[in-house]
Figure 1 (cartoon, protein in one colour):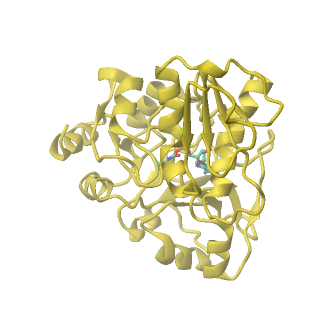
Figure 2: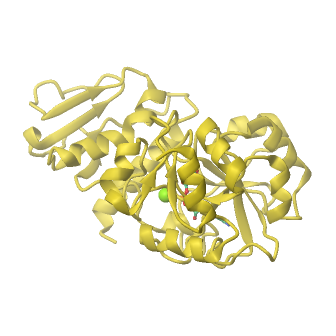
Length: 317
Ligand code: TXA
Ligand code: MG
């Protein structure tokens, strides 16, 4: 579909998948509760898991919140458009369905020309990742087509540049708190506002970011960290490495992908690797652990998403 068609569908209360620099989103009018209800239905998303609202201009923040701390403006000018989602107290006009009943609202401006053009035409859009709830996020238009077939039209914007979802930063707490790690690291945030953000490792039931409670990022193949003691059906296993993996060379894997220290590329391709493994009927995905010496801003997000996929296999929830 083209951008004129996408605009029309959204302005009529429909849902369209659109590209961003992180992952594809399922877009619908952020001020139309019925359109938002369609997004929850299509994704099969629990109603208490709130959505991020995507803007095209920082001035639109005032439509959703009138309680913006000063350092939030500093972060917006440093990182927007970009992969940083900021959580504020919401205004009463924001549909409760968008925020899962929470008193706060999550906002970001995506750094993708197609997304920005679309939002300029339609106004603010809710945009959860465009995958069925619990599956890996889509980073290519074909991922969305594979997941939803003709139930969702896709505005094709090519491959997502970052490949992992945005950093979510709660500005309602002091200091601000990272609810989901992403490409914008705590160090990058600290450099801009001079305050080190707190970090919630994982959410219990009291977590203010309901999304961290739910199954995420999980392919059908089981995901595990590789160790020298790992036993598996090697010929049905994908191995993802990025440094040098001792002891793996004697095994005959179905497939081995080596990122040679290119962590940005690993992030960009991780979900595609998960999906390709499923397509080829592989049973297992083994990933080389990250040594604590590696200093790269995307590592925390990579570990977080891989841990989610691993956890689900051991906890079965
Ligand atoms: O990169 C991204 O953020 C992508 C692209 C499409 O923009 N979107 C995305 O949306 O990842 P979603 O819905 O899959 O994840 C949003 C996360 C969830 O963990 C959700 O719980 C959290 O943000 N969230 C949304 N609103 C919140 C709020 N008011 N308070 C705390 N957490 C919130
Ligand atoms: Mg998601």
